Amino acid sequence: MSPPTLPTGVERRLFDGDERLATRGASVYGEPTDGEWRVWDARRSKLGAMLEHGMETGLSGGETVLYLGAAAGTTVSHVADFSGPTYAVEFAARPTRDLLTVAEDRQNLFALLKDARKPETYAHIVEPVDVIVQDVATRGQAHVARANRPFLRDDGRLLAAVKARSEDVTADPESVFEQFSSQLDGYEILETQRLEPFHDDHLAVVARPDRDH
Ligand SMILES: C[S@@+](CC[C@H](N)C(=O)[O-])C[C@H]1O[C@@H](n2cnc3c(N)ncnc32)[C@H](O)[C@@H]1O
Image (cartoon, rainbow, N blue to C red; front, side, top):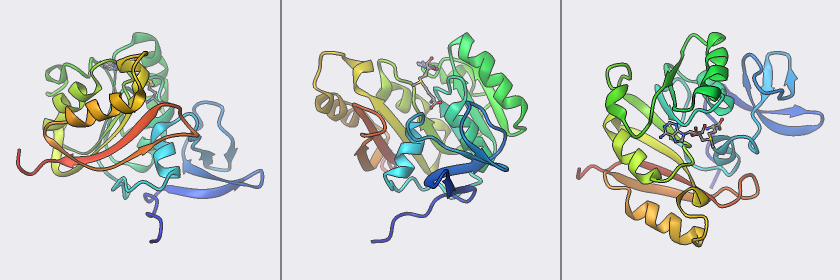
């Protein structure tokens, strides 16, 4: 089987002799650049790691995106550089200040200082989306995915990175991942993949809205 193609706007390019994922746009976190291209560092990005692992994300480029857990904008800056309108939710004030700077360079990136567990607080701003990217690293990750499910178009995709230690530092990661999957009501899981060696004890999940819901 041939590996899934990358979204338009994401390429594998040579940086210092190594093939790396790259997108075009203003640099954000000191990543290596080559002209208008900049490295998308999979060690700094779970979505980057999902692409490096060849997961079928369904991304083709140009999608409308709701990004949950944007932090200072490392990954969402890349996402906005190959997507359409990109709504970035982050509830901590400090990283949101950096996120706002990242958004200044990107007309399609909208930073929202909001709690992803309370989608009603941004429902008046966010339109229906093709993709939800979730990287909240907090307790209740399945709840966050369920609560934001109404934003997702019927043919959309949830691309979630689940951090085991955020749910329970003492539990076996595999049992945390099983619990997350069993709590993902409203979605049908299409693919899962551990993100080692890029990120330890993280499970990446690709899911779509469950048609029976
Ligand atoms: C692992 S970091 C995200 C890194 C980021 N996705 C990236 O790749 O650049 C997780 C972020 O989720 C945020 N977060 C956790 N719970 C949240 C919630 N309920 N609502 C919004 N943001 C949340 C944290 O403040 C933190 O900045």
